[in-house]
Length: 135
Image (cartoon, rainbow, N blue to C red):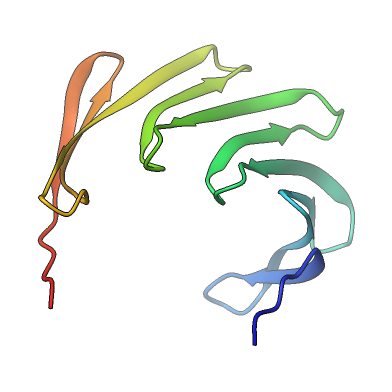
């Protein structure tokens, strides 16, 4: 059986190590996007964020909003034809931080990446290696 969920609402309660409620997040999933509303323990609205996805399920945009509705963070991702993230543009608008991460890949004979190099504003930041076994 195959089932597609078009709309879903999730309520997450986050507790600290002492078991005290820190916040409550209400997540609404609609088609290719998610919208989350953040509340403090008293139920006061503190902010929200949205996430958009492409037709392949890749996260393409994350936007975080302040209580007054202003955009605080914008994070946009670009993917290649194989659904590998090739660029991520992160902007923290209050702090004036702009980060551009790009990704380079090496692939095995099956077309799966085995090496990913992450560049932060053009400088190498990390290398991820993975080994895949085929049967």
